[in-house]
Amino acid sequence: MSQLDGGELPNLLNIVKKLSTSDNVVHPTIKQLREESERIATLTEFGNYHFSSTVRNRSAGLTVYVSGDRVLQSSLNKQQTEIVKNLSKTLKLVEAYLHRAPLFYIPLTMGKNNTLTPHCDFILSRYKSEYVRLAYMVYQTLFPRSDTPGPQLYLVDLPEWQEQDRQILVFPDQDLTLVLGSDYYGEVKKGFLRMAMYSAKKKGMLGLHAGAKFMKARDKSNRIGKIGMIIFGLTATGKTTHTCHNHGLTEKGEEVKIIQDDVVMLSMDGSALGTERGFYIKTEGLRPDTQPLLYKAATSRDAILENVLVDYRGKLDFEDETLTGNGRGIIQRTDLGEFMSESLNLLSLSQLDKLVLVFITRRNTVLPIAAKLTPEQAAANFMLGESIESTGGDPKRAGESVRVVGTNPFIVGDEAEEGNWIYEFLKRNREKVECYVLNTGGVGEILEKATDGTKIVKRKVLRVQIPEMAAIIRGICKGTIEWIDEPHFSTKVPKKVDGVDMSKFNLTNFYTREQIEGYVKTLKVERQQYMKQFKALNPVILKAIE
Image (cartoon, rainbow, N blue to C red):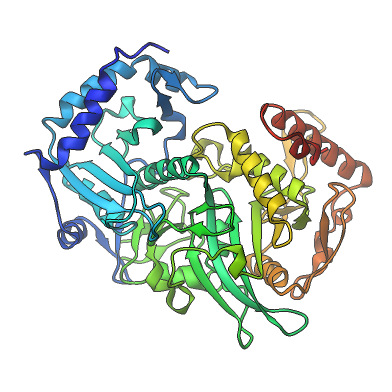
């Protein structure tokens, strides 16, 4: 990496901190932001508004983390290497531009608690009128500025930056993020959440890319139990879908309260601090019969839609991916109605009967649809973070198998530390914490070369449906599932689930014994090779995948 001259970052940070009183900055009200945004939006059939961005996914491959003169990523692609090479020049250009550019300044707060509520100052260019929607969207996601504990985070967004020079610069030790050349709202949302999770780590907590909910469920002995649930998952794998679902818990005394859909800060006592009031959901395939809570909220008057197909009559089509497979919507917690939790935070273990951690994966071959894990296996699943790439991360790789620690692409620092933290948490609280991995993909896929060796043959997958997975989660909460040993991965799997024909997912319906053994062996070897990179990881976690 080329050395910074030494003054660029301190100078830039000093300028950013003083921007709130600069002559080129305006401080709009939420009313002004909404009115200006709606003037440039498309009115839909439901009376809410739709916006379209130029960039339609996060620029993960153009993101660089820097501490001092050190790049924090272990490896860089060609574009990231070029960004680092020109870093000093870029910072000087941004510094000069901020003196002249017309800007919005939006001071907000993340979370509602007395422990960690990052203050999020959003500085946005007014160079084009359509950028106002980004200010409106962030206002609808976070909370008005409070006087609760910080830290102070800054994010500068200049969407008009040259397209060929698009880049996301993250300076965690300075609490500063620069978004250059992107008008995609997800870059702003995740920019603040990334920094907030880093701040949580410095306070001894762990920021999780996970949804959270509180439930009351009637068990086999007719007792109502209090259950907390944290659901991990990459974008487009079902994290928000199952966080915002009632799972059919409708018996007398049962209830579901949705707390968060994206990021929480977990403490060793099992409590988790929420972050946002607006949920940034993926709208792909949204339907009232399979996702009634999300559909109702996404079609409410206060929902904000982004990059969804809207025809000339204002009619929405959540199924059409002509423009992008990454259609989005910001929904308000209040539009979840009776399922909205009054609190933004999850109770501690002392106030719960149990806490359930769910690791969502999406695989299509030999992984069970549901498996119960030991603490060691759960920590290993946290580190593996097995899933698929989505259009929200890298559209060119959408559908490919990926591994992301904690299913969290926004970790700053040593990922092994996070795995060790999770294992210590699970070991310390093993009497009250249950862990599961749920496969929202399916079984039956075959990937092999045709006899002529020219192409790959794919067999159609039997997918688990949303109501089926909801029934499995209901069974976990009520304690009605009988678990038996699974022979391939040393976990436990359901023998029977009320409302689901588990026999149809039996591997022998799709594969020969030799094929099963081959897929299992290949997966285990891949996992072991992947895990070897985490030198500081507790050895018992590594042993759990053997």
